[in-house]
Length: 161
Image 1: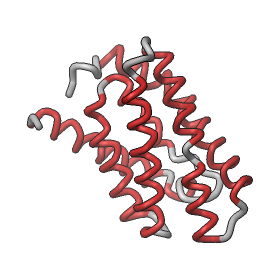
Image 2: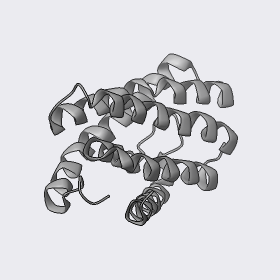
Image 3: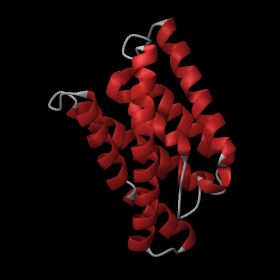
């Protein structure tokens, strides 16, 4: 891996952690608005951003989650699964907006893993928890899409890594 890629992913992981820390109370409940999840759209521009996103999720869950063991398995697992689905689909989906819409849908649907986690950890009802976590994820990803699009126009994210 190139030094440029390592540095960019390290910065991305640090940004993910910092943004998550700012909204910590809203990132670990059954109604989640983890604003840092908008960084998931970066894989649409370059799949190499996956490393920084996964590291950011891992360290955020390790240091800030009230249920570390569950979050390291389910939270990181959900991110890896959704990112991989998006990366594989990019062969077939052309256009940044189509990819970001697909990415938003994938992350929203895979929140069932977080619902399972919260059901196991706290006994929260699965379907209602899936609905609330998926809704929070959908809103964050939807709001994050135009932000990432504008950042890409300004920073040319495809070439930065």
